[in-house]
Structures are given as C-alpha cells and as structure tokens.
Image 1 (cartoon, rainbow, N blue to C red):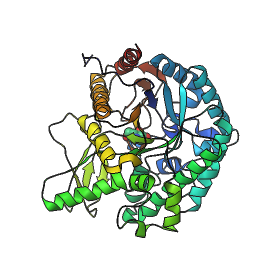
Image 2 (cartoon, rainbow, N blue to C red):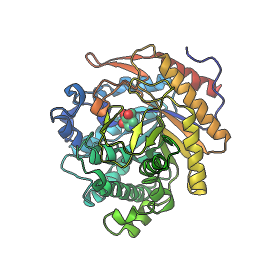
Image 3 (cartoon, protein in one colour):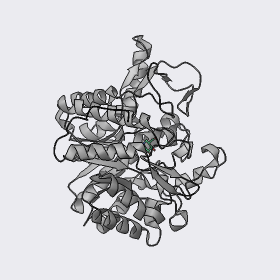
Image 4 (cartoon, rainbow, N blue to C red):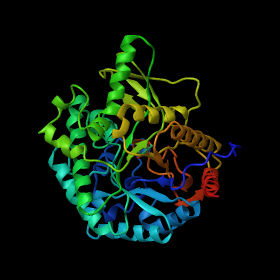
Length: 436
Ligand code: IFM
C-alpha cells in the first residue's frame, strides 16, 4: 500500500461516496432512445478504436452486483446519472425506480445527476427550448423518485459539454463553433435554474450542481501569458460559477448571450444548497502559440486566445494529467476567497485518475494525497461536506473509449467480470477508519 499515515479525521456527517454516469456504464442501448453520444460514436474516427457505449459495463442488467459492490465498499452515497433518453423510452423510469430501491435497501444514499452529457438525439442546446424540455423531464423524474431521493444534482460539467462538445468538436455533438458555442453555456445554465425550480416545486431541499474547476497557472509572468491564463480561468472557473453564485456573467460575456439575459440570470442564480466541484488537475496556460496543441488527447485549435502548456516535474496519470493534490486546496480556498458567503457548502463531486491494473498503488497515492489536500482546505475554513471518487467502475471514457480506466473496480469488458482493485480495499479501509 502506497501510504502509511492515517488520513486525518473528517467531521461527523461528512458524505463519502463514488460517482458514475449513465452513458458511461449502463449499456442496454436497445431499451432507451438514442442520445447525441450514440450519433457521434457512430461517426467514423470520433471515438478511439471505434468503441461504443452500447454495452459499456452492462450496468442496467448487472446493477444488483454493482449495488453490492457499493455496499461492500461502505460508501454513504452513490452519485449516478439519470439518462434522459432512457426516461423518454417506454418504462424508462422503472430502471431508476429499482436502482433507488436497491440502493436504499443497501443503506447507500442515491444522489442522481439529471444531465451528464447524454442529450436525447434531436435536441440541441443551441435552442432555448431544450432548457424548458429539460425542466419538464426533471419534474417527471422528481415525481417518480422524490419519495426516496433527497439529494439532487442538476447538471454535470456544463463547461466541458460546451467546450469539448460544441466549441472544439471533440465530444458529442461534435460541433466546432468556438466562441459561437456561448449560447450552449447559457441554455444549460437556464436549464439548471429551471430544474432547481422544478425540484423545489417537488419538495426538494438538497440541490447542487457539479462543475469542474481547477487552478489556472500562468506559464510565466509575461503579461501575455498572464492575460491568456486569466481568460482560461474565466472559461473554466467563472463562466458558470459567476452566474450561479453572483447572478451575473463576467464582464463582456452577458452581451454575447441570447435572450433576456437579465431575466434568465434571476432563474439561474436561484439559491443552491451546496456547490459541487469536480477536480482532477490544474492547468498551465500561456499566450497562443499559433499551432494546434494536443492536451491529454484534446486537440486545441491554433485560433484560441490561449495555449495549454505542460506541467513538468510531477507524476502524470495514464491520461497524461499531472498529479497535483495541493491544487485542490488551492482551488477551494480561491473559491472561498472569490465568492465569500455567496458560496454554499462545497461537495467534491468527482476526483480520481486513470491508471491500468488491479494492483494500483498510483491511484491509492492520488486519492490519499487529494483527500489530505481536502482536509487542509477544511482546516483553512472552507465548508466542505462531501467527497466522491470518480469512479466506481472502469467505464466508457467518452472519446477515449475504454482506453482510460478510472474505476476502483476493474471491469473486463469482454466478460463483464468485476474485480475490486487494491484502491477499492484502501478506500473501504479509509471509510472504516473515519467511522471508528
Ligand atoms: O469520465 C469523466 C466524467 O464523465 C466527467 N468528469 C471527468 C471524468 C474523467 O474524464
């Protein structure tokens, strides 16, 4: 085992969990409608090795086994996502009804995310109407599950869905709109606000969103690098957080958004019970270099007003992402300083790393370092209430197909055999120690 000292004690009631998402694990494509990801995946060259999520972890048929793995791990909570295309299919909510029942019976709190990138095919976030349709779907889900689900997440990482899916064309729906993708951001934010309204109407009082954030480090103190890093920080750390927490867009952005932006901001900034942060790594950013850049499998076009630079001197995951635990403390204290009492309690809704192997000391070291960094943020006065590992299972890692393994549980995709990794045993022990 890669670590020796016990992880410091977190407060009583701190929520420990693991996360997954529907498209990445469910499979059973024949029992749901198609999503933009199914359409994208069918296009040659979009996903590594031509992989599809048609079977993925076959979770729809094997959720009993997966709930047993969760119970065996001893987590308080399980963050999964509800597939909007599945809910649109006949009997689609029945699956989530059973899953929630099974989780409750196993003593694991269900924490559904209502949108994790699998938009029904034919819908488009460039259309305002999609936000209204989303709210109607959320009402339907809350009506069916709200008697047992008490903690809700509206959207997962709208920044990545906008940037990777609509600005750079690396994820579904594969659009390369660059800055013309901004309405996609606005309509997701509006969808979030309308979803909060729908959930409140259904009696929910524990609602958050999962946004990805991380420190942005200028490549140097050269003003051009500092300016480029500031712009990247705006895209990653402020474009979604400012409207949600402050009720306004960063300077110069609101004018680029569609519709009655002032009225929409009222909806978007409805108070949240907590704020979810997905953290993986910091980003080092400099002035544009006039060439396309490969950033951990993401091709960044030359015309962007910044360029992502390598962070050297750090271990990297199989994805090439640098391992920098203290940057988790940094982003949390930066958020506390930036948003003050407008920032509700924080939950780390994702944190994890891709490594091969069932014996995975690197993952243990990664999680250990980040959980300690989280504790330092608590000591520094950040109100952190929970931590979810990404992910329970190895799964379909979007454009990387099955080539990146983030699970605490290894999945053999040929046989669907699940094998808990060393990190699963390590996390189980950590949870035991926290409760002793
Ligand atoms: O797998 C993804 C997840 O769907 C969203 N957050 C980042 C993870 C790792 O890339």
